[in-house]
Image (cartoon, rainbow, N blue to C red):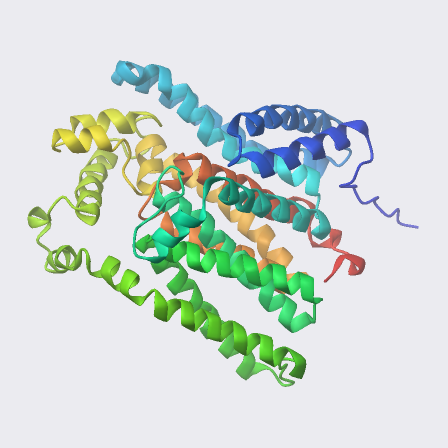
Length: 438
């Protein structure tokens, strides 16, 4: 008789598991509230992961190819480091810190080790992560700031800048919206769908008042894509599912509230979209030399210059902290060199840091994460899986216009959302049981 392999546990089976879960919870919740606390929890969590890895009984998981990818990426970093400190001695001290930041993206493996394919653990971690963002917003914002935003002033609530704030609020909108739709379709209790509605409305108003065009573009693309996908699925269904009669009114009310908010904020959105209409027209005409140094114009000029630098060292790049020195060497006014230390496009940033080899390694890691997320989607968790895929699409699009991944905002997103996807990639669909299905 074939021996049934025991399912690894994601719970509080040992002291190491318990300490690891506490550290992971603090890490995911506190990063926007108190970064030092989160970093301390990270060290504890990483130590617990190392212990858990050595104790892992399944060799196919313990020696998964993702660890070979990690080793290859670190080897690339070491090789590039020696070139970077010789070429740019003025930023030599920052090279290791910037390299460590990129290596931390692989912490998604450690997160996966604790989730181990458990849908309940994945939901818990997502809830903790989003709750931390909301708590931070409550601490950092006030009524006056929100009213200023609603009156047309661009606000950032004291974070790095408005683009990063819009990223946090966009995540709340996507995940809250997916949760609310799930509540409507599955008949959740009133407190649950009420909480989901509040989260969705908070995200919606937030992405408007932070006035970040890249976020608006990404959300528009995602919304249109979801409409097309769901219309196609609806047409293909033999037995079509409709909203329950008692849920029609909440759905109509939600659409009404959304419409009212958007109508109220039309002047704010219209002004922001028209701010650089002349620049967009100049770009459309192909006159790159005539583009003024506005928000969009600076991006175009730095992208053109950055791409030229990529072609000089296409395979291994210039080093992760070399972006500052490259901009200083560029044909830009002094005020741009003082204000900007990156290229506002994460794909260009990776190519400049580690070349095609580095981009290929991080792409391979992301593909593994996405494969795991698709496993989650196909395991009967439609709304959670779709929400996570939409969040990834959102992340990919906005990183065309801002380098989120080189900041803590992008790093934490990748580690938490990536850890959930990596969990199902490493431990597989067979870990999803009927008792866990929603």
